[in-house]
Length: 357
View (cartoon, rainbow, N blue to C red):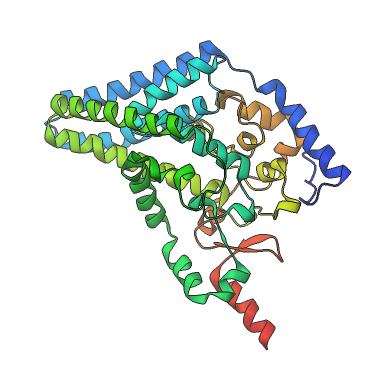
């Protein structure tokens, strides 16, 4: 039976030992298996090609619109595998990870080097209150800020919903990130040194060109109407992926900390969700919903995340989000430093009213 987790906090000897123990326990699982990785890449590309082939062969059938579903599922998995390459976790060789990740980016349309750099910054700074504003997916307004600015608080409450996260995320991935300026390192609020800016820009330009060539070839092969179906699957995958990103860090009992109390392991264990999924959904998402394990050690391949979760007591002790918890991801959108959890708009202002009474 997993033991209860200690509370996150300052760098006490106990907290340091807690972090060191988890890191050391995770290391044996951070080993890539090239054969298994090659199978994952080859099989998903075969499924992708097969789904497109069905669309081509049966493109005159009324049920062809149903192919949006398998195409969406396959594209989600392709993108997560591209993400894994960015962490250098899928294959043993860094060069092979980079090569495969770059090629997958030609399909997804998301530049590998630019995404890799942006996403690794996210891993190093997740749950830092002082770093909000760069990663807009993970920049909660605090309850104190909401009380100080009720209009912005109401806007945040009204803006965050399943449809809006789906739509805005799809627009960001499919359209906006065709420009390098959409990535974190080129945003106005990014105040840290960017060491690989030229490489990120080259990555965006190369990916745009190759992705355009891929889309043109697809349009010629499928025909206009069936090409629209393929595009709809791409948008659907981007939107679903954005919802996935959202619930991985924006949930009621998440974690945020100021610089003095922040630690990498706390951000992983307490600030990254675990969602228990069935075999099909685990396959589609490449186990990324074991997100707390992934954030503790991003070098653990997707095919070892569950084994790591079961073997490390501190990770096994993290409870899975339930359906009711997932709904709260879109209503509990203000960080209450007093209670150490995300709270809804009404609770923020109810507490304020109670304090004034």
